Image 1: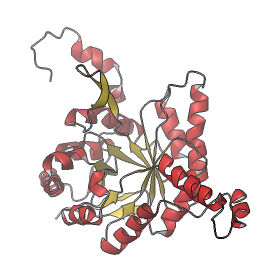
Image 2: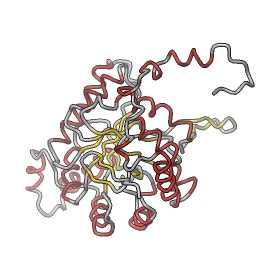
Image 3: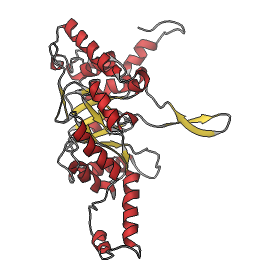
Length: 336
């Protein structure tokens, strides 16, 4: 039998399939089912920075009220850098999951600043989390802030969180940077243990009847894989941390491609919504079948085999290929 074990961000996994942050992972029953079907780890549905701050402010306001039992503690909180309050349900979920399943449990925080909420990772660690994923995306729409200023926020967030915890910190990023390769390399050298490429964002759409702004493209599709596939292949062996692929991995073919590109794991969610939890087992069985056909006994035998670093034709990952395939293309013709 093929060895499907993997290691991502210092965490030992029974296989490379991690269930990404989503509604699939926000309950004990849901995670138990995912584990039963073969998931190697789960990233709990993201808690947003604003939720942490809102609860912190509520606690602060209650302490400053006339009816607070010990009003003298307000002065203590005014000078405390790391308030001990946190969204209770999220912490309880982490703790209960650790008692209920044997696979790694990875909380996720969606964040855009490095202030106020950064006491919370310490609470996550105390609850038993195996790692912490930071889902960071700052939309570059502030015309008054330079790209350099925008990117500094990412490092500030990472620095603050690393000061709070000893568990592995994983960062999930977007591709929207002026010099993506260099930025990913620098982020990987910041002390984090894993990078996930890339986020799947909320996208606005327009209702032409009501003129309302609605949500569009909530779930990914298999064709979404190509952006992350390219950048996993480019960055493999060029970062100081492990790489995981996200968005567009819907079947064993997508999983295998990302492993060949150099990913150590993949995060999936949309395919589970579309096909159900048994899709995990199907992907793993097809991975084993492919490995047997290619005579690979373990994932390490082929991981990164098609990365740019190992390619005999590194230019195949560059934009010039667009011209090669589409020059002279006629509508209706198949592109191979």
